[in-house]
Image (cartoon, rainbow, N blue to C red; front, top):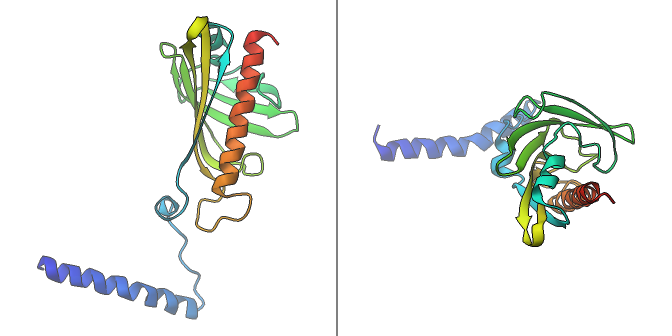
Length: 197
């Protein structure tokens, strides 16, 4: 089949697809369920939030707190941490038991002592707790002037509703505002922990 004929055949199939879908609806059939990656192409775009704070302590002292994946009980709202797997990427897992009775489960995906950075993702989405999905974060301690540390909390995520036309509360602006507020609160708690305030 020539390339011209192949193109004509593809155009004909594309033109017939809506007709087939209409016929299926008329016959009482349910419309097809979108595939697992269809929303990535036609729905939400990835979002990013990067927040920083200066801590009055050397990076090594900040990293000593950040690096212990199992002991993040200093995060706002966390009552205790249940953890396993240590600081080994893909094996390190933790459950943040929240003071309100809920929980957040996370997996460590990167741990780099030389660069003083680690990354982890949430294992389950809970848009009532955080109106974002597929949330992954990197936390880094960077040297700053005067022996201080610039702590960075960076996240990549999607809005809480991954398809087109999100309802109020699950849109891009809401997701970005919520994640930014989370990062700022976490950094403030880290600063207070390290500085002993």
